[in-house]
Image 1 (cartoon, one colour):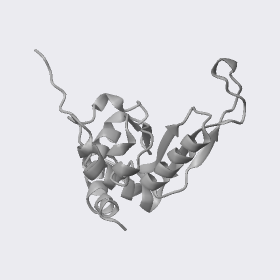
Image 2 (cartoon, rainbow, N blue to C red):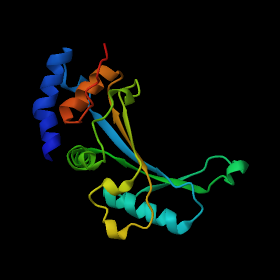
Image 3 (cartoon, rainbow, N blue to C red):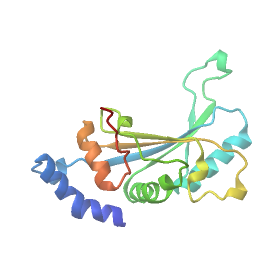
Image 4 (cartoon, helix red, strand yellow):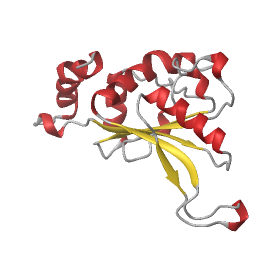
Length: 182
């Protein structure tokens, strides 16, 4: 059990039960999974292999190749062509990734002032997009051939933004202080 998972069990669950008057530990909102997704959109096999390699290095898990479900002639896309890669993290790897994301990766983002509270999707999930994959500590700068973006979707068991926001703040996510004018 890593530090974040231990913190979740020891301090976050009792705090969430107290704040939202939840009677049962199992009803407390928790992290369900994290999906790290990269859209390649390219027909180049070398580029796709490089993206899969960096994604597996970032997450510690082999990525799943996503294929096109329908053909789109204007994009020169045929059904079954590989168009991306994704990794779904659960359990220990999920908590390790969250710990790394909050404590190492987000502080490395240039001009980072915090995550906007507006990016919660209304269902209690958080989606963060990165323009460059180079901010992750596993990526060596001298090995970079192409720079690509990626998306991190953090799925929770809650169904509203209020509880999810509280959960993310207790987990240590750095949210932006919203300024009010007037």
